[in-house]
Length: 174
Image (cartoon, rainbow, N blue to C red; front, side, top):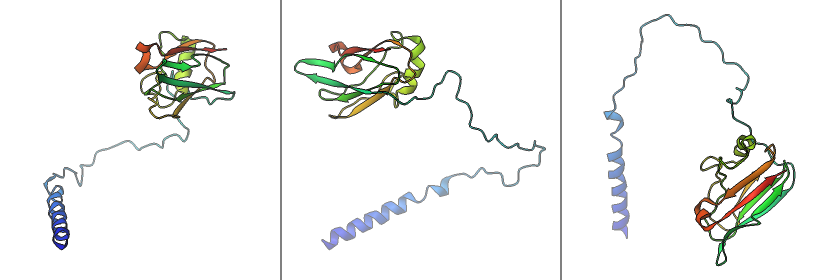
């Protein structure tokens, strides 16, 4: 037992000694006294927060009710339950992974109202791709989408990994 302890200690010492030589091989290219050149006097940055870039929107939290939609894959097939949901502006939908994951919620930008696309995207946090939620893999894991500020219209959605299994639905925003 004593031999193993000494062998481990010696190995740690040898590995530590091998790793410490990297700094000596780097080349320092810092100029200590650069030549004097006339420069403009720096100005202070404005104290205000910069405005968001054109075309970007801020996330709007839900102010209405939250509707739950289960994401299921079992012997009966892959599905959202309920698949078709009607919400009001300000409501939210909580997608809950029940079984058969991984599941996600994805909107095809070419099939949703153009007037609602930017706000819907802003309300979808942690997107894997544009208008696509992260994958939910564990039972009871959930993803909430706020429909606050999203333009009225019909928003078809699907589960990307199970689209071939017809796992899709429609959200109607009033």
